[in-house]
Length: 114
Length: 111
Image 1 (spheres, rainbow over the protein chains, first blue to last red):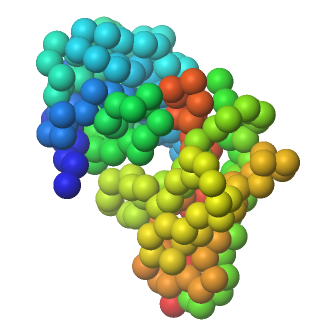
Image 2 (cartoon, each protein chain N blue to C red):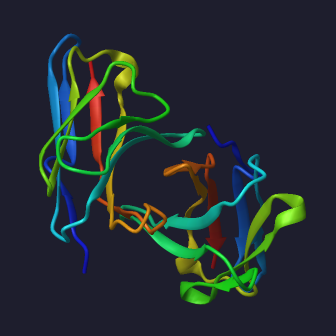
């Protein structure tokens, strides 16, 4: 079974703090993704990566950055957290073959920014 | 970005009733289509997917979906729901390497 794990299920941070969300997958997938999930908006793509050290902006990259130093790990960074970044963050991975494949999701991290 | 519309925000029905959830997307080219489900407290998981071929696809737990290209639609159906189908359902469309999701439909099945 594909396993995608995220470092925390719940996280509470203060405005202005730097926040790291970690994601690890154990299936040697090339592609990894970060989404945020908000009620009534579904999932929105923040960033994705199709290889180590490669990254591409998604639909809502503002206020976020990412890091992929190893194939299995994809980190989402909030340089200076703000209250409008309170959300559920989901990480996903998928195998290659042109990216037209099922994405496997982690359990999510519910981030609250006070 | 691809636009994906799910017609219903919240659907409430009784066990054994039939379920149909609508999904429309905006892009007219080649797309790959998915339905994902999120049961309470669980990971998002794939119900079914369409890449090509037979436009009627069958997924897990008795779900199926029909791709109608002329209507830009990919509606999800289940003939007889169970209480355990209570969940949030997301339609998603992939093109240009990006997966775009609809807003989701919460389905509540009453015993």
